[in-house]
Image 1 (cartoon, helix red, strand yellow):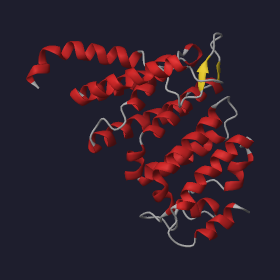
Image 2 (cartoon, one colour; image 1 turned 135 degrees about the vertical axis):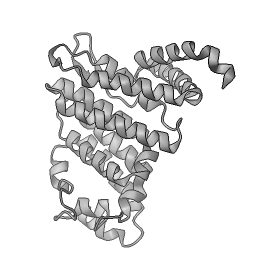
Image 3 (cartoon, one colour; image 1 turned 180 degrees about the vertical axis):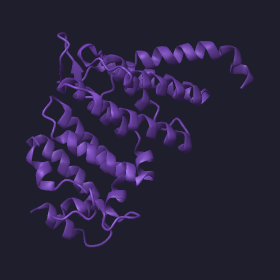
Length: 268
């Protein structure tokens, strides 16, 4: 309150510095090499992870004392990226750092504030992914979408339509041949499946069958439904296929009645 009033300009400057310089979290498996190319990260940088954890903790405190200020800062920064149409000279670092910062404050806001904030962020990121030209640019935006959605399971559990849209987008990224994107898509799918397994296993409002039943069915249960499972599996590398089936296993474990029917469908 009143005690923080004299500190407001300093706290705002600190927010801007942290958001613009956020360290890379361990969940992000692609990076930019010395030549400026996007490549898969082969090993974890422990110094960077330690720095990320420290910066995340600081951003959470700053969100607690000024949630509206940090939300406005992040949304405005993302809007600037949307208006940057020069793909040939696009520097992805500001977007990366912004998205890492967005993911880091998961759980620091109230449910209502988080809902409107994240819905706006994901809409803008999905629009940016559609707008970007070039495989590298799209891979960068994809990795940021994957990271952000994986950090907000509470939001996804509360909004099934958004959850389903996100997972359909994940399945699109699974077909991506760019280094690290498929792996990150499968890891994110596993993370979401662990946190939202009941949502996938039970029939949700306005749906004719559960998500996992629709996934293994030869005929989709809803118009504009899910991609058939064999098509998804076709492009998976062996290690990523193990991760994908582990995710499905979590969904199956939450089915209340006759899970063997779904298991039989998965084994076909």
